[in-house]
Length: 157
Length: 110
Image 1 (spheres, chains in turn green, red):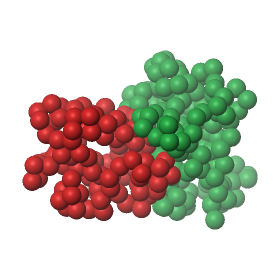
Image 2 (image 1 turned 90 degrees about the horizontal axis):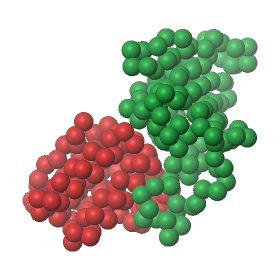
Image 3 (image 1 turned 90 degrees about the vertical axis):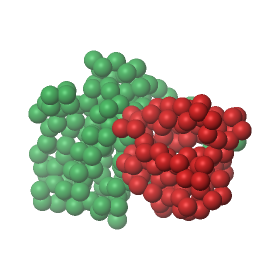
Image 4 (image 1 turned 180 degrees about the vertical axis):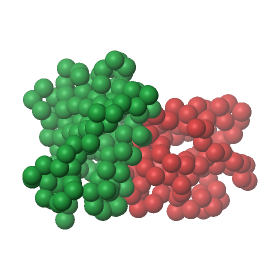
């Protein structure tokens, strides 16, 4: 694993037998809880997906927005912006899907109790749209039992 | 990085280049509030050069829109590409904002 001077760790994961396409692998990032890392991490992950042959359109927008949301949620609500706490971002590209897991070191939360931000009474609230956007932009969204890791899957047609 | 701001026909035009996300949202809010303090009331925020916006970016737009309205001013958004417009539609924020296709249309109608 390579660690940048700023504290971001990057590890290229080897090609596994089930990746489907020759040369495909993954990338694992360990990120300090600092919003300034978000754009860099998003570019690294999107760049990795492009290298693996994912269409530019798929990697351009939805993936970047959803990953930005997952990262900021993990840093702010999961790790409480504690710079000593890290966020693990693990990306695998398979022939039929992109899979990204974002895991924080917090106590977790219940994703089923998030209010609907499109309800008329919530429309003018500045916050509360992150998880909603993830669910709109990602094909499959699951959480671990503790609620501190989100797994996002995009299906590749 | 501060957002580029120009004044055209008494309208303050702020261009969002790159991303409007959690890491830089406060800069936009600060910029609008400072401009409101100097007496400006007509605003256009243009997204022609924007890559993507996250929920924090949308949230700060909701917030500054409210501040401008409370001060008796008006805000229009412009230059949303297909993806960005989809974000506003998904969140129903297209019902909250006045949106023009182009910056020049927004300037002439704000």
